[in-house]
Length: 375
Image (cartoon, rainbow, N blue to C red; front, side, top):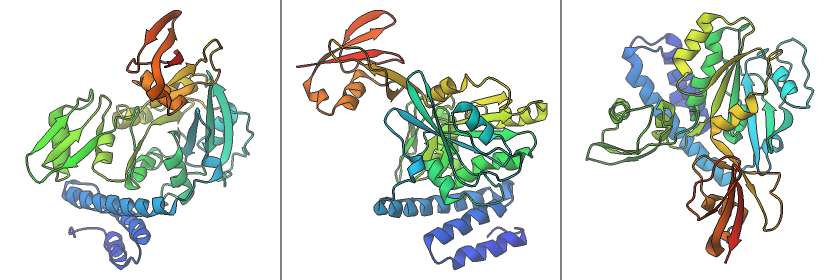
């Protein structure tokens, strides 16, 4: 152990050694990590503990998948529906936001910890159904609850509300705490894949508009990875790299809403310097400002596009297929029916008043109408 650790950290480390199950050890390691001061002398220790946490999370996740536990009913969603979880500390404005976005009427009292169970509301925008879940308050000094972890793992996107009536840094600890559980935020996500080898040095395949190959290699070397291949994408950022080196981790898109009526410039400067390159940040008054921008911001954050299918001789479907930016007619055909790929002849595509005859590899865009013709 590193010397000069706080007494409570040393005591917590003893609990780590005495843990009797992977779950207990994970909880104790996460608490231990939170007690280790952040400075140059503890960088390697924190890195080692993070990798231990990642390994345990992978082991626990493997066991969880074997048990085939289904998510709670409130986290299930239909096709072409996006699941959005609202997180924040108590009194951050989650209930007000849910009420304004949907037809739900959650209890709003102005008292702390009013929301004790998940609150659900739905809304529709441009044919897309959004299912919003207000999750009970995030408590900075506590571990994440199983309900909060279920919501994080099941959601397509997270909205985190920051409120000026609460201290800033404890609220923002949510992002780092999620990382301890193997959940990283990057908007839009740019998943990376790491293959480690015994020799040969580091090689970067693909390119990121945020990180140079030298920066990527330096990042990996800081974690003791000196040989291997890292596959990156256009949107790959540091959180995507962190997830790649921690098996079992997930990358989720996140939107940060600053519920600030009178915006404190210090708040804005701190948040912009820490997070602006990782995900979008919006400053609004949840009670008063228009929220019409939010559904489109959600679609952009996840790079989801809407494709409307059309039967031969019929009208386009009012309910779109949701795909990711960069998808092709092949993805559309596969979503309609698994046999369509082997039977595919061509597709007719309507875009901006024009009709095109296209093949499987043609890239679709948001709002396209596609009619599949079979052999």
